Length: 248
Figure (cartoon, one colour):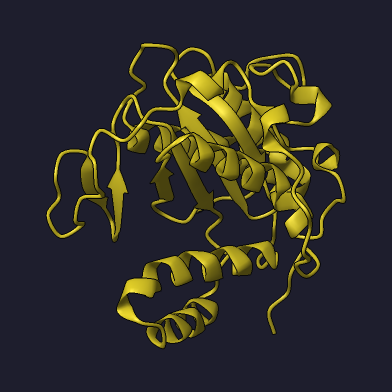
């Protein structure tokens, strides 16, 4: 029997995300360089594969990234999910898969070690904020992480795959050290979506900040401890303990 660490999902009314824009994101969101989404079968500039997932990465783009713990979606859950997706028309399967994966993640499967120790991931994310990249919104959920990341001003950010790998590597070493565990912590690869326009950016920010509410963890955004709208992180690049995290 599968065990979870959160309650069921609930429907909530999202308040205006404009109040949560940080550092001039409104003017920083970029239009896609291409007029139409390029075919994933024809990996045009910006598209690449990492493991089994296609990724789009342009250094000046804002990207919504999701990565999860290795035990967050057990094999049986993934198999049933794929069976459900296969019943949908081909042109709806990608969207259905993303929606079902997010629903299963919000169900809180696995050990959910980030519920109590999400501060480590938060500090790792913030360590590069304002230097290598800019964080517009982020939340560390009990078994997964959502981040909206982009460039610092006119400066190109590092490749997204390298940034995510550093987040995972540093946080895994720190978490394993604190928990006294070894082995794989994170599921390989990640999901990402680039922002198509300003409205897409606002909807993405609203979703990220409201994820703890949608998962029945809190009733207000700011009450979830590991989020960019929690008061302890209001200053952006700072640490819960007042020091920059290190994986050494």
